[in-house]
Amino acid sequence: MANVNKAIKISQKHLLGIQDLSISDVNIILSEAKQFIGLNKSKNKKLDILRGKTQINLFFEPSTRTLSSFELAGKRLGADVMSMNLNNSAIKKGETLIDTAMTLNAMHPDIIVVRHQDSGASNLLSQKVNCSVLNAGDGRREHPTQALLDALTIIDRKKKIEGLKIAICGDIVHSRVARSNIYLLNMLGAEVNIIGPSNLMPKDIDKLGVKTFSDMKKGIKDCDIVMMLRLQNERMTSSFLSSNREYYEYYGLTPDKLEFAKEDALIMHPGPMNRGIEIDTKLADDINKSVIKEQVELGVAVRMACLKIFCE
Ligand code: CP
Image (cartoon, rainbow, N blue to C red; front, side, top):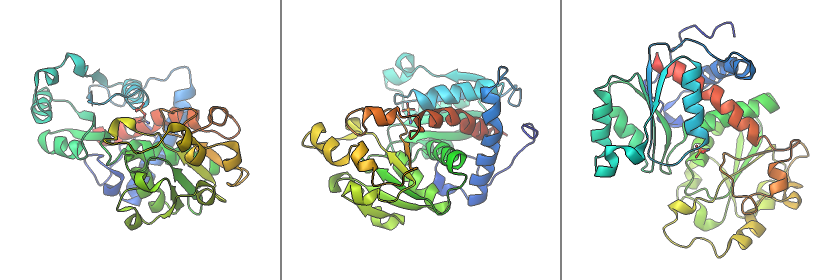
């Protein structure tokens, strides 16, 4: 915790996607986040690094993990944090994202954290406000802080990412988590296998530097990490699956499929989980294999690091 008060600079004003970051930026964020892990386990979690700064959380889509961890992260750093309740906002009267942004900008926030259903919404917002913008998930495009907390969790357990074989499995086409993780894990030197039914694969998947599999057992063979994804029913405009039961049979993580991964393979899931659809409930809770709770825990540290770095 020696350097938590030291000012840190990186190449970007905003955190809109992993694609905008250099490897040096990523290493700075992860090393800053490591400093907050211990603080978050201690009795006194309060610092005053962001005292006098105003953080606005603007979530147009539901969230448990990302919203609560950004709120806790800001408060632990001493910022004044306002999480907009969009059900009671002028959005309900038809106000646009841009007008909402201009209105909030007039109140001089130092940082806005935004989640929106449209890909590119955080980029648009960043062009309309004076402060830094952190993308907390935009449509199917990117969820950069999720990928950063996933990387921190892997490093915490495996001590490295370079050379690891990592499987990402499930509803890839609708997943901003998959996209951000593919960019970040490739950048950090992992070998990435993408697994899913062909109608849940993005058309441009071959351009992303990954291997693709429709057979889950082949895809997770000898993997160090098996990252499962949620079926995003809310983004499915037509019927993608014949049944949840069939999906579970072919693409749900079960003990017999996990046998194909390395013996010490770790299970990850960004949450929220559909138990019994993409993952066996006992595996999700298996403290020897699953690091899902650790992902949530380290999410606070990563978001503290991002707020500190991008607020300065
Ligand atoms: N992983 C994730 O973004 O979870 P929430 O939707 O709960 O924020």
